[in-house]
Image (cartoon, rainbow, N blue to C red; front, side, top):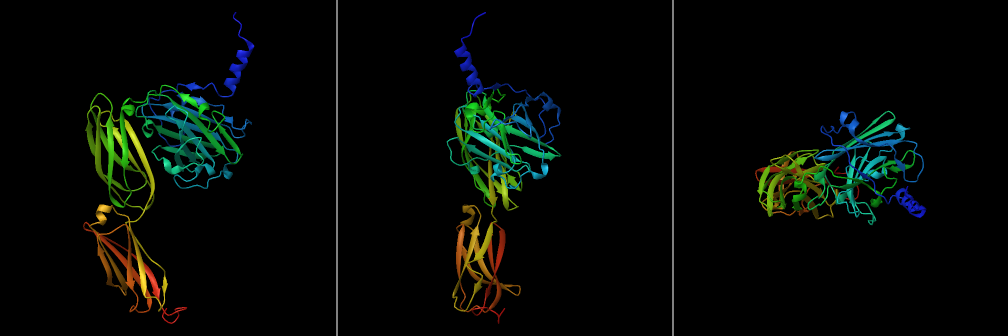
Amino acid sequence: MKKIPVCFLSTLLFLIFNGFCQFEINIPFFSHPPAIDGNLNESCWQKAYVFDVVKSVEGDLLKDRWKVFLGCDTEAIYTGIEAEVSEPDRILKMINTRDAKVWKDDCFEIMVDYKNEGKEYIHLLINTQSVKCDLKFSPDARIADPKNFDNDWPAICQVKGNKIFVEFKIPYAMFDLFGKKDNDFRINICRENKIQGEYSSITGTFQEIDKFFTLKNLPIPDVLKKVNLYDINWATYFGENILTVKLTNASDKKITCKIEMMDRNGSLTDIETVQSVKPKETLEIKKKYFIGEPTGDREIVLRLIDAKTGDLIKTIGKVFSLQPEISVYTDKYLYDETDREMAVKVKLNLLPEILKESQLKIYLKKDGKKNLLWQKKGLDSEVVAIINLKDMPFGIKTIVAEIEYRKTKNEMSVPFRKGKSPFYREEL
């Protein structure tokens, strides 16, 4: 029997236990992928690769243990989590807005180095209320910026008694795989358990990419590495919007693609675009889409699909706050006899091309009647109308701003008061 030098064996053990021997995994293929509902009860999970020994970052034994399930298909990586929670009533869950600082809550995190280069990763987080956050992060970065990356990755978290169940679907199309040479991703899966003060992961670290596990030979469709969507210019105006984007086909055959827009939490009307791209060809594509109610927090997704196979080639998300098409306010609420002018400020969230042909009118409304005070055609996104107050009688009144464009008319009003200083008692 051949003897192994003690110094070599010691060095090998040191490297392995300190994470320098990167762990490689071939995760099972799911012929019937799970519905992402947070139940973790479908039969495919029984075939998953299981991490049932999760490590504390500080090396301590975990009070609340948890385990991870992994599988894949030609569209995505699927991740399931089953976690113990000894004090469910104390779960920290303050964050309720997409892309807010979810890491301040009890949460679960997936870090994906899709380039397999060890330089940066996409960080996906979800709390127990299923509020999500995603960002691109480099260990050299000083702060985490949820605004630097948005995409579409279904995930649900449920708390049931003393257990937490989480399911993720991580589509390959959400990553920039154009030109990628292999089918390997590096991954880490983490938990922040604020109740117990426990920080743990499948690797025993958080941000050390060289210790992430490698998912080998993922069944990524080749088209995702041959077709690119880039130089994307899209807006979030109320109503009509225009998308411009470049599409490159680096393969040796013609590809017919469908470009579509989706809305996750509101109304969006999309004009479907189908485009054929010749081998080694780059095209610039322009298309319209319409964003409707409600205003407030919104999430839309741009999707590129292979029209023949149905493969999802590329997705890009946008998380934003939709502003109303018109909002109006005055420079102050109370005016007295020394005030000679009022500044009425109007903000318009409409496509610039529409504003150029739009007309804005400012009215004074009292006793159900509107008297025109000011008007202008050809507008910017912010308009200031100066209104003469010299001959305006005292009392409570309403300013109405009305925008008219392309056979559409909408208005918004704001109240104000005019009276004698200092207390306006006689008139009001």
